[in-house]
Length: 577
Image 1 (cartoon, rainbow, N blue to C red):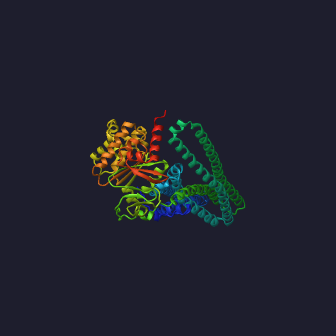
Image 2 (image 1 turned 120 degrees about the horizontal axis):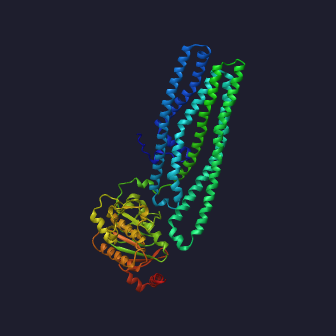
Image 3 (image 1 turned 90 degrees about the vertical axis):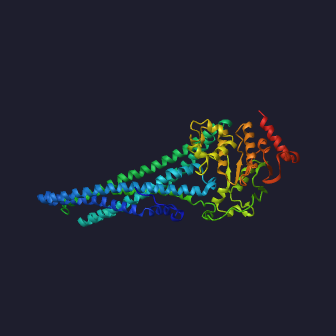
């Protein structure tokens, strides 16, 4: 079994679609070279069979020489065996090339999406990412697979022309003129195919994104009665995709028709001309049989050339989508390679808002404008490159991103669970002890969730945790955050889906957890819940993106009217039916 070669960003030129395909092919030079060799021998052996048949007719049947007939029959048998052997080797190698090319493309796309991290949000929608990671990479593999076949077919066509010139210069010249003309005319049909495939790929990604949005927000849509509106939008996008698909089918039908008609036309012209030459005694009957076989055989390599050009065209369209993704610059890629940097001394802080996170503290942050909470959390976690977040006096943006990710953890309600056991989903590291998991479950009030599962922590979790309620998922996310043990954990509304009793218990547990020595670790909770705020060691009140006041919850209620009004308004909204 062939090992998939290692790839790195430096080794793959993705500045354009043709360069990207060439770079992927260059990574498999030996495989593609072997495919070209076997394809060329396979096609050439088929070319030589008509020559051997012509010799058998002229020297054996016409001349009545049995020895010559047997000799050339054995030659035909040998050529058939060569054709079968090399054809089998070629097709096997083609499958290997297709598989390896697709795997290389998937690996590049996956690594780059991982390098982009949170910055990919807003640059690529889910539908395009899904299509790029699945259908596009498969199309690229199929296109590169046809390279050897096209080259072998070209070799076969050249051999046929040479043999025809050897037998009859006029007939060879006729083929020399017709074949390039036919291939050129067929190439004109590939331009609209390329254009329609590009449009189809765009509409496909758009519809996939729409479907993902509807599926993710189905509960909300039902709550606000927006199902019909989004269903109508989906039908419009679906109709546009169907129209694009019809245009692609029409263009592909034209190409397929050319694959049949053009070689057939060549066969008819060449056979008719050869028959006229026999009547004029310019060629022998055996040579006419050979020319007829050449004309019929030409349909195969010409079909392969046109089909290969079509597949390579589709691969170029897919490669253009992949290179668009790969050309998105990863944030501070050069810094990611630095692994010897150390974490600076000092608290995590944001100079724009004035927020500072002291060590060993449960800090609550209340934002008068809720979107400010997510923006501030993203700056502190370096999910956005603002330049205002620092550790002590060191800008967070100057540190290697892996180091930042290991020290600062941002947990939001949009974070997902994958299909795996509960244990591996909440504790990915193998160094986490069962005691640490149990303690995290206790703090997050999630012990009862695990106890109710048939196999406990070893129970298989479905994708996105669909078998759990919203409150259960929040508690499991909190457990996962606590198990990670980051120096600073940022939680955005981690308890807004749990009941009041459980929320109070979680808040008490978090506060007690940070009263005991925990190696200077701190937790920042962005929330407006009075139950959490009452237990927080310190509360920061943010207005217009800046810290307007700080203290305990009771102190802010007493001395800051804006904070008091915000809490009173939030409580009023919570009790309204």
